Every structure is written in structure tokens, then in C-alpha cells.
Amino acid sequence: MADFTKTDSLYINENTIPYYCNTNAHLIEGKVKGFVLEFPGLGGGSCMGGNMDQGDYNGNLPSILASHGILQVYTFPGPWSWMNKGAVRMVNALVKALRKKYNLTEKTPWAVMGGSMGGMGALMYSANCNVNEDSIGVPGRCVAVCPCVNIPDVMHRVQDIPRTVFRAVSDYDMPIEDGLKLISPNCRTADMPRIPYLVVCDCADEIIPEEHINDYVADLKSKGHNVTHDHLPGAGHGAITDDEWCKIVEFLLEEFR
Image (tube, rainbow, N blue to C red; front, side, top):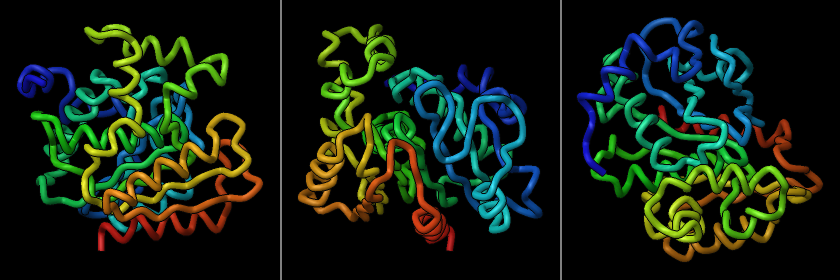
């Protein structure tokens, strides 16, 4: 991918950050010590708390992270983006803007997270950061809750997925089935960075089959990746128990200690 850093910064910069994300910056006292990027689920909302209505990011997790000087960033790559190449480009530009605004360096710790399409986005953004020429570095940790890891199979399981996935890769100069593989985590395990992963499976998920996530995690582990794989028995799509929230918080905070 060509580097359009200078031209992209005309649009996404330290002054325009609120156009492209919500943050908990208003809750942080003192210096920002790092940041967590959160990616939206299909439609723009998130089972992890974020939404695409512009404004301050409030809630339990944003408050906890703020108390540790950690910026939580709910990104706006698009509700149908499926972490396609346009979404990656936008988030890269946003990361550069955040670093400039808060005087952060490439060595400043950061992590990614998301649920459903956002969980898939966290995984795919990590992969793209690892292989793209325009990389802004790789995140230190990745949390993926009920992630869509096998897009070619899931595409026809739910009525509103096909049009959104087709749209995400329709401008790729290749057959749709090849474009789907570029945004499907199970086809990109070779590109994943060597970082800790927390992958959460909702065992009664009506959208993402449990075996999809089990197979994906098994593939990552077979390649030597450090993956914590939690199962939530009886949980439907996007459900997160209180105990699991505690594990997610602890997992994220470990990156900033």
C-alpha cells in the first residue's frame, strides 16, 4: 500500500480526531500513557460498549482505563467496513493523529479490541499492521469477543451480512471470493503478529458457530501464538459475563504495566 501520510493528515489530524472516533479523554487526569482502539460491530454499535454517536466515551471500561491514564478510542471506520483496506487506511491515519496530539511515540503501548465484526476487525487490523508497508507498528495485545473469523462461511448465515460483506470488498480488483479471503481471519493466520490474544467464544451464539472460533484458535496455537481462549456457556451473540469483563480488563491493563 502506498504511503499517503501527508495527504491523509490534511483530513485526519490532531484537530479533527472527534470526527473519526469517540474517546474517554475527558476522564483522564494527567498524561496519556497509552491507548486502546475499539472497533465497531456490524451497524456501528458494539457489545463492548461503544457506539458511533459522536461525543465523549463514557461507561465502566472507559472509566477504568482512564484511571490508569489509558485512552479508549471508539473508531469510526464504517458500520459495514469489515476492516477492509479503506478502514485500515483510516485507522492508520487516526493512530498517527492520536500520537501527535498526545505526544506519544511508536514505543507507547497500545492494544486493540472489539466484538463480532469489531472482534474480527481487531484481529484483521493486527494482521494488517504486521504486513503493510504503511504500518504504524503492531498493537501489544488483541481482544476479540465472538469474532467473525470465517467470513466465506458466515456470509449466508444471516440475512444482513451478504450485502455488507460484498460492499466491503466490491472495489477490490479481484473476484469477490478472493476479496473475502483477504478480510477473513481464518485465511490470514500466517500474518498475525506475535502478541498475546484473548479470544472469547459465546457458546450459544446464533450467528458465529462455536466451531469456527475453536478452529481458528487451534490454528493460531499450532503456529505458536499465545492465545487465551475463553468459552461462555449458554451465552448468545455478544453476551459478556461479569467475570469475563474482569478478565478483559486485566488482560488489557497488563499491556500498560
